[in-house]
Image (tube, one colour):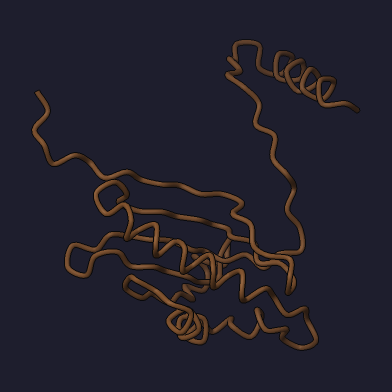
Amino acid sequence: MKLRQRTKHVTESVALKAPGAKINGILIQEMVNDGIELIVGMHRDRQFGPVILVGLGGVLAELLNDVSAATCPLDSADVEDMLSELKGSRLLRGFRGGVARDLEALGDALVRLSELAGDLPDEIESIDINPLAVFAEGRGVKAVDALIVLRQSTAEVR
């Protein structure tokens, strides 16, 4: 089925099942498979400034609470330390014959997130990427879902 046909099918199905529903648009996303899901984020702490967080993501983020955090700026050694602190770090390295994951791309993503936090200190309050899919070695990473919260202006609104 072509994209236009699928879109029409979805809108017709909604009209049948919920006649009063208003459809503002349809979001089409790539289906992401075969990645280990991590949670990656940045929060601007009042005392320490920007802090980067990484941990097992998706539904495991809340279940296992397996996270590591470090203050910005990060370099590759910091990232290595953060990943080694995770209980689930062996999953990324090919646990029990599993596929080793693209730790270089993951490290690059964390360092770049740290740079973004440093480059825009007055604009971004927090960033939440959950999940960040980490694929097999050499295949990179992909943000599947993300939320960026902008900082509120401290200027008085009139």
